[in-house]
Image (tube, rainbow, N blue to C red; front, side):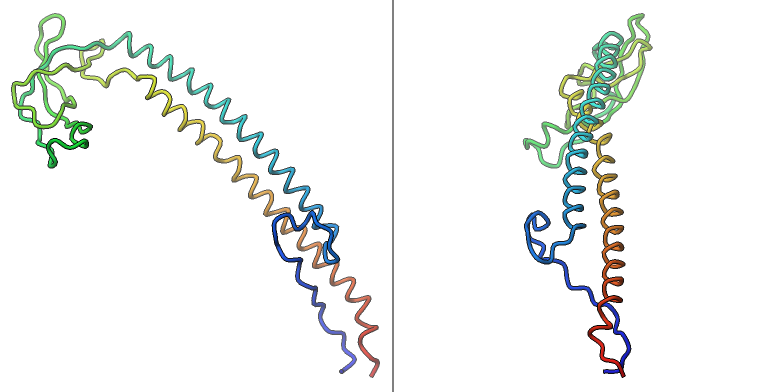
Length: 206
């Protein structure tokens, strides 16, 4: 051996099994337990913050969408109309998909005053020109979508609530990563310091 102090070689961390930072073992460092507590705290905060965000965002979205649905129900009504041309035929007639499919076609309908108008409306596949359908129109006499139902409101509330809460776990993961890197740097610095004090006893003088 030369007399030069070799570089510090910190031992590998304990085997990462479930909850290893909580178990007593000779290689567990104080910072390992600190990381465990920080991780637990972040988990609890993330769960609470996510639940609160979902609840608050969902409540606000439900109130807004309910008012919108009520306004739509007051301002829209069904009126008879006829197809100007044939609706496309579904490629799989008689299938369940056909029952759910709607095609946009031109329809002719009359306003309350008797004036004839045309517009684009969604109808079932395969309807021939001249077929009678019922369409939704708004207070201006324009073709409109049906008023939102409870099912529509529920799906939109769920989507908005989840979208609002998505940043919470992402932010928690970023914080945990930063803390973990900081602790790792502290561990390495501690190993360097301890090795500087220990290495001379392991290295014979020239």
